[in-house]
Length: 114
Length: 83
Image (cartoon, rainbow over all chains, first blue to last red; front, side, top):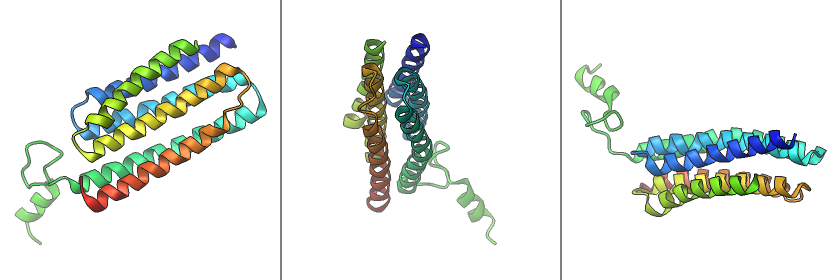
């Protein structure tokens, strides 16, 4: 049991490290958000299971279950709110250079007015 | 076990801290802050597991909720103000 909890804690910490490296190395905001929102959440799930095995009390089980549920609910909501806010602040052209700054729906609308 | 986990978490925290200090836009800084908060939550859980008593396990709940409220408030702020 000691070994199982140790492996889970180290695996979760490695996932958090992968998230940090992704937030450091990726090129644009949405890729960074993709790395920073998902990998540490799965890391927290792994570390919580490992800690619950290591501590082995009822208080630890219930508290860590609540922590995992709250993190799984709040992390996508926070990432979605942040990406929506920054997407609305991005200037969007009808023919931008990449997918993030091109508004194909507006271009369609402009070409074929109803 | 704890030492290896702390080293891995420190490397991840360095990445998020660089993004917090150097992010080109305000949204990048919020990404760094959110990730740093996740690292802190994981570190508290690791510390609670290393003491085998779990005495610090309730603080994790507060840290998760504060991080969520902080990220959402900063997103609303960016939506109003612009990056």
